[in-house]
Length: 255
Image 1 (tube, rainbow, N blue to C red):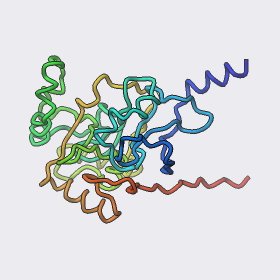
Image 2 (image 1 turned 180 degrees about the horizontal axis):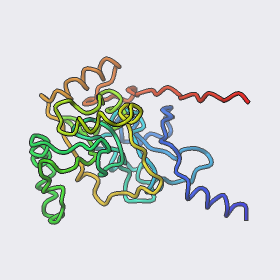
Image 3 (image 1 turned 45 degrees about the vertical axis):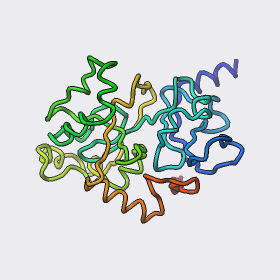
Image 4 (image 1 turned 180 degrees about the vertical axis):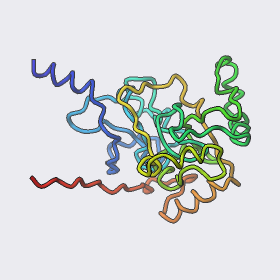
């Protein structure tokens, strides 16, 4: 009975993202020399396989590689078709949140972002399969959906949390909704991330929500420079490149 109760709790509680960056050599695919971007169960007491509602991020902490979509050891640890990032960024302000959901800052697409999304190499391939896909018909002024932001050359998906921490500065003063945004509380305006809810389900094709940065884009140039200052190269990662996150310490209240 206790085991059934514990199993029920495990199925209803979604833990925080797995950010332990320690790698062991026995987990590496024999025929793969790519960086360590594997995903694993969160801890000893968590179910063996990742569930559709779990938040998936790159194990190296800063970039998800195209090969991670089909990496055997990643797929083996999923209860769904394949592991994919579940968090994206707003292409207007950089904030991160649940992939495909609307940006909570109230951002809307401008002409440039709409044109860039429609010109992605993946669009012609998608149009045959997703004839009714609203994403192929987005208009200027439509609410921005959190997107996978990829590098210009190799289509490496930049980790949404890492991107927001480096690039998010809130809504630009030139944006139409800046006046509404500035009225929000300082706590809201300083928040870089929206939570991934425990009931978040896997999208049928998350790669519909993709935004590829141009090599001349100011965001890409700034991001690349800041990343290399940390010793990270998002276009050409090597196995020893890992973003190391500091452990957050909670202060205990004195009773």
